[in-house]
Length: 438
Image 1 (tube, rainbow, N blue to C red):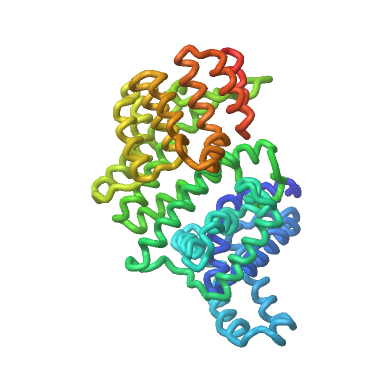
Image 2: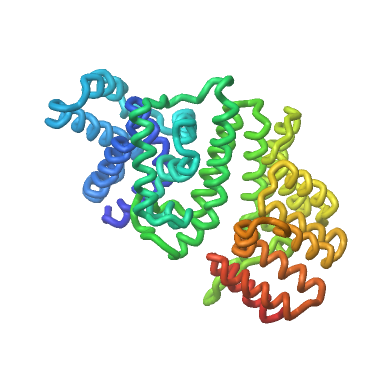
């Protein structure tokens, strides 16, 4: 086997199992940093051994065994014998090595990964670092990539993550799914983090296309599809685990509906031409994934049956209306207006406000939409107005309304502004073309 083939196998294993392996390694000790070091060493060993020995039948178990041996070596090191507390070198070490790791079924430890998610969103962890921490520990992104997404220098992001892991170790935060009594405050953060992972996949697509970072290392190579799939898996697993948490089912439905439309977002590849972006209304619904739409419908029904409405259920319902076009051929703009108005009342994010204004422009007329768009930042502090000006979807939606209103010159200026604000080459190309047309 060539080194390149061995590396590809290691990358596939990292994408599929990094979070689960890390959860197993860290669960016994609560020491995420040490678990990451051990797992990193195991991957390095794989790149040395697999080209000559071949990829083992169960690469996850092989990596887990090597990583745990690294942990054992660390516990037995001279430094630890001299300085580490007895419980660290003694009981915890024995607990971690008690299982016959070769017999571990890595695919059957989904709950361990969910435990890791809840660890990342423990109240003792700074809320600002919870999603970055999950991105690194569960999905294997390095600090440079996470920092690029959050517009934070890599060194600063690395320091934040180190402090968070130190906090987990020092506070002895347990690796458990919290009780029902403790669930309300923790579940919301977990749902937000999973959704953050899904949303970040769009940026991941940019990273994959060579925007930033080195896409050649085994841990951080996860591509946009993998990241979206991972968020989908985590959302479904969490909803099934909790059974009657409406918002968990709402998030699962939202991600399923969104994933279903991914195949229609870009035109099919053609030789010698980059794939071009297609806005939602122009997408061929025949390309959408019918199975995922059915899954989203089923999840949304489970959520509604609990009768505890919330933000994710509203967002899922909005996606359901869009996906219904695959069956009816029509978009129910009136229903979208009702749903977006409810969403703005529950969770008045800038994105929801822009979307509501855009829908008003469709239900009434473009000028009504522009009026609603102009009211978003009216009377707000300078900081809020500046945030709106930097919000790419605001300019893209306003440009579309201006074009529909026949205000060609203004529409071109807004399409140009939106084009310069996006990181996605296909979207930028589309917006530039729209700017030229007006």
